[in-house]
Figure 1 (cartoon, rainbow, N blue to C red):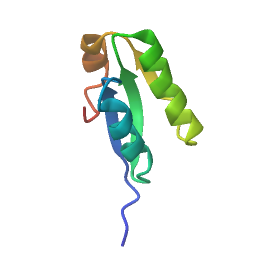
Figure 2: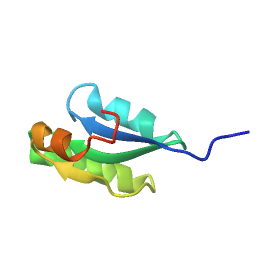
Figure 3: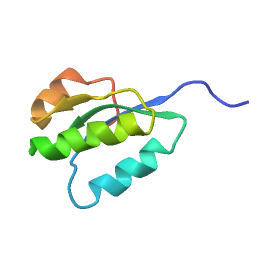
Figure 4: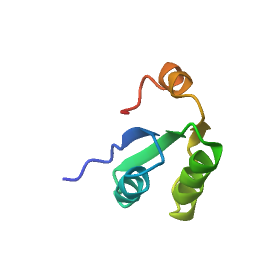
Length: 77
């Protein structure tokens, strides 16, 4: 019996390996990317766009990883 629960992921880092890893997460039906973060605003916005283009909910966007960590203690990062 398949679980209906979803793993909530906060994604930090949109450079180098980040885009490829994000693509893998977005292909998983039991994963929800709830927030993304990068120091560079364009990378962070690109990750948000990638999520919504895949038909996933729009994640909250951060430029400061410490703020993301403070506000998202229930997520897996």
